[in-house]
Image (cartoon, rainbow, N blue to C red):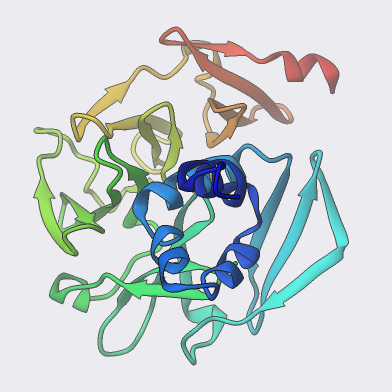
Length: 290
């Protein structure tokens, strides 16, 4: 054990254990508690867990919060678990904004003030990150965001709000425990009530959103990208060959690559899986297997 060294012990051995087991090892001694709580260890541990074949699906029902295991793309209903939220609040009052390496970003809707919470359901820990900005009503399609880790291993939370035709983007630093405002795209109309924002999907140092307009013109769909390195926004070209109105696009990551499920309504309902590669959208090989 003495020849192994602390780096080997924590970064190569304990970082491969499940989160619940890691929490139990924090009780060994003060040094282990400190080492297993550092941002460096947390980052290594979450990256290892994100590469596992087994994933978790968290669902909010009216009265319960359900966690299912997904193994090789299949839902394992026999392993379903009911988890409790740390606050005394009905799941129907919760809105999931995004997820990142096991962390859940959600909003608690209250009559007096809304609260934004970072929650790790595996180890039952949470942190309130709201400030006075969140005192007004939270809109399901008007507020969105995502999470990422910057070059300094600081966990960041991106929050986007659309109100009165304007888009306000802010970012929270876990290290500084504070918010700051970001510059958004000038001359953009995405803050209008006609537009609906999706949740953010993290892929390749970028968080992607779909911004859809089902009113004027009907079926318009845009892609807003947030570069986590420069913390700047841009608009990506949407593939012309799937511009069929009305159309919906739902982002997801497969093997750390951005994909989109394109649902179109023409003569019949169709769904197609496309992949973003080399600044272009191509039909993914998974389509040929269906």
